[in-house]
Length: 263
Figure 1 (tube, rainbow, N blue to C red):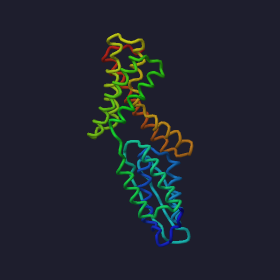
Figure 2: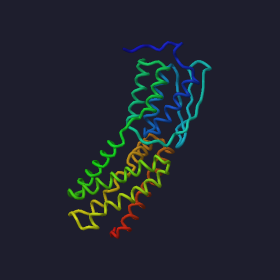
Figure 3: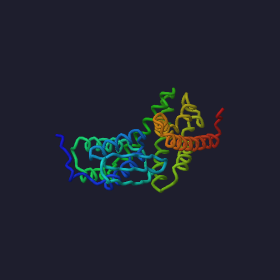
Figure 4: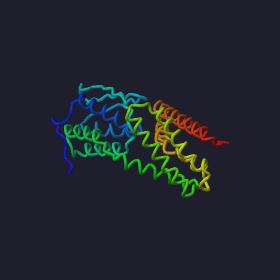
């Protein structure tokens, strides 16, 4: 049932700007587009009788909040953290904005819910690893790979993704991580060619690293471009391009090591 937010329960501009800046930074870090951020933040601000203006930069979010017709104004800046893309966090934070807009939660409860959402991103690494390996094997089949090639890609993906989790867990730079993982998967994916097994060894070699392609950053950069967030669009595109270059270097190095002709 929808409830109304009384004036006494509404946060001040300072409290709301701090909350929205952290909310926005976490939402962007989890892979949301700029347009989703603008809509969610405006929805939350309106629910508390405020207005918000957001300036989204590649690494920071500048946010101003004010109450129309009063001197209650505030501004906050939050850094966008380099966190893993999480559709769960994106969905839960968007749901939270709607619950606030519908008056289902007060500000104190919303702040607690926000902390719980960002701290409790529970994902079973083994389940994710299995699904990633299965998905990449499906890509191999999509490109015409036979059962042996699919099995090879599945194992190469599982090994590479496990290595990725280990390296990122130790704080290794994402670009170096992608390069190393692409190299490892490319070497394992080349076993079909090395031992002359299967009918489609080249498909196994080419698709063994597809799980590392930064598809979401490319899509987000295009979305930001459409909505005229040119700085964020360019930044995300360059980040995705650098990761693609790292992937390509690792793939080429692995194929050269296994003496596989690329052209």
